[in-house]
Length: 154
Image (cartoon, rainbow, N blue to C red; front, side, top):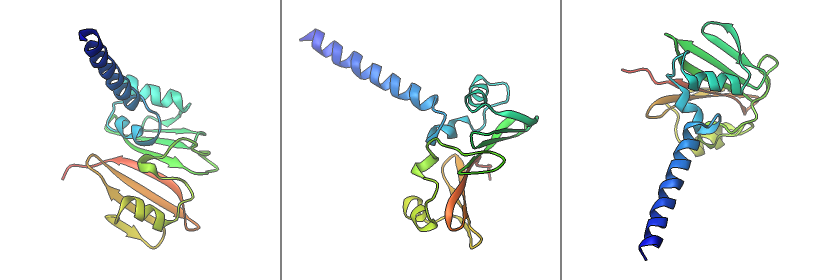
C-alpha cells in the first residue's frame, strides 16, 4: 500500500514539473508572455531569437521571416509582434496568445477576450492583462497582427 501511495505522489510531482517546464519554455501562445522583460543577455531571450532565426536590425530590434518581431527597451524585451502575413516579417505559424487565431473578425476577438480598453474604428484594439498588454490589428476586417508588450507601471 505504501509503495502505491509513493508512486502516486512521485507521478504527480513529475507531471507538475513537466507541465511547468513546458510552460516556461514555450515559444508560442501564452508562453511568449514569459519572455517579456528578459534582458538581451539572458539565455531565454537568446533561445527565443534562435528558435525563430531572428536577425538583428539594430541593438533594440530583431526580426524574423517566421512572422515575429522583437523590440527591446532599456536592454530588455519590451514588445513581441506576430504577423499573420507580412512581406517583411513573413507568416507566424505558431499558436497566438489567449487562443486568438489570425483571420478572426473583431466580434470573435471581443467575444473571446471581452471589451477592449482601447478600440479604434481603423481596426485596432488593446486588452490589458495582469502583466502585459495585448494589441490586435485588423486588416480587411480580420485579425492580421498581434502584439504583446510589457505593461508599464502606473
